[in-house]
Amino acid sequence: METPEQRIKIAVQKTGRLTDHSIDLLERCGLKLTRSKDQLILYGENMPIDLLLVRDDDIPGLVSEDVCDLGIVGLNIVEEKRLGLESEGRPALFRQIYELDFGHCRLSLAGPDGHQYEGPESLENTKIATSYVHLLRNYLKTIGVSAESVYFSGAVEIAPKLGRADYICDLVSTGGTLAANGLEEVEVLLDSEAVVIQTQAPLGDQKQALVDKILQRLDGVLQVRESKYIMLHAPRAALSEIRDLLPGSEAPTVMPLDGSDDKVAIHAVCRENVFWETLENLKAAGASSLLVLPVEKMLA
Ligand code: PRP
Ligand code: ZN
Image (cartoon, rainbow, N blue to C red; front, side):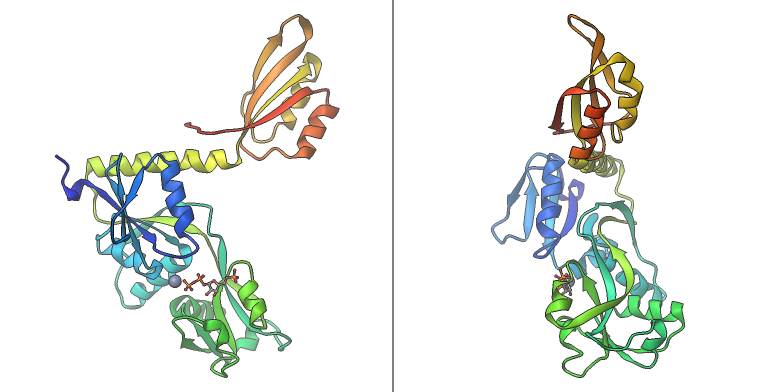
């Protein structure tokens, strides 16, 4: 029988910008989930993997305390936690093992529209409101500027209007929040995306093997997002030119066409999106009967 200790626990953001995408990615890796009554745990039906839905800021802590084996969380939160622990002389007991290429955003400094900003020296002796105190202090130290960081746990963007700060340091995704609050971005401190972190505690062979399998499936899931299967007919003479035009493809399959000596069929997996322009270039090179199909699954 499987004991609870043999099941992998993954901490995932409960409600927020990473939630749906995180769950969707794991489901695409083949995990079937059922919700618990209290909605705080998603149980894996077909694999010993459960998801714990928690506040994103708690994820690095849960993983370092070994309550969860893995976590899916923004790099911004991972780095803030890591610097925070470092400042207390404690090591981070989690490591980043995978970049998920979604949830892209940036941690930026912003000031009121129309204010004078002449580079980082304009920050000298100002007040900056943020929830990312450690990342902000680290940045200020790196550029050699002294400014006061004012901690806000949320709604950082209203700090300048309240007269509590001159600048803010917060996450920017679409920029909508800044615009709505009459703020303009002046510096980017960190580019962030969703990442997978794993506890430093050894998982044991069985659990580690399952983690490795999930990561391999994630590779496949992330690759097929962009990948396309392309089929076309081409004159034999144009083969090498056409091969060069196929975006991100390795050795294509070349097959003779029934009843034709000088034409071949070419099939290839393109690991990049295929745009109209590419198709037009292929056609100009002599290709015909072009067909582009989505790729459902891929295992390298
Ligand atoms: C961030 C940030 C802004 C908003 C920016 O909050 O604090 O409020 O997103 O996004 P935009 O540029 O698309 O407008 P988030 O949604 O991550 O919530 P949280 O800070 O409460 O975790
Ligand atoms: Zn948050």
